[in-house]
Image (cartoon, rainbow, N blue to C red; front, top):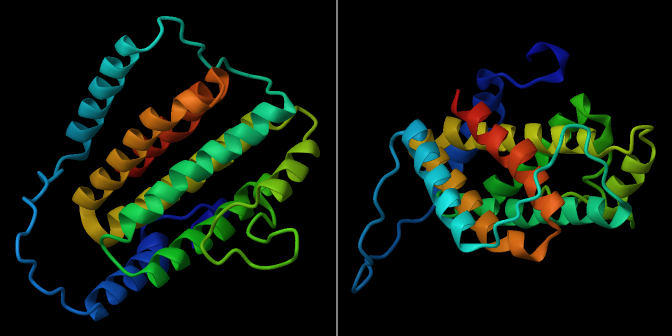
Length: 228
């Protein structure tokens, strides 16, 4: 295991990759569809995907209002915005789960999502025990319990927004790396594309300061970190 509670690529391959590959190998063969849909173009170059994703975001921005509230360093969110940040992240995580399940079994995906949350919490105390709900039940699908995370954030003297964003970024990066270890660069590109597409759809439902924080401090850096 890498030092400072950080997962190396070897750690991810050992903990997640082998599990996901094994589940994929054991999955029953799919019956041939009568009229199969045309295959989606393969995303083989992660850097090329990142470039195209940025182009999509620019095109989307042109169609929306011109004012764009950027998330400044040291941003301070109120309680409603902090909760919105967690909910937006979880909405993106749900999309990630669905995308990965097109490659492998639900059991393998749940295992990866849960284990990645547990490992990230070792390095980011703000995520401590967020894999348990308020009734003391383990969230086996790796979803973050909003109530527990909000309680943890309140314990942070600086308001917790920056620390939470950093923790969520590392969590998403580890999950992306797990996908890359198990399914290669093409799998990573498809997972990142799904997150980007969902973000562009979902951001209208959240405060701009929240969506900007998620994009600049969480999803964007996570894709880059996983691609390195």
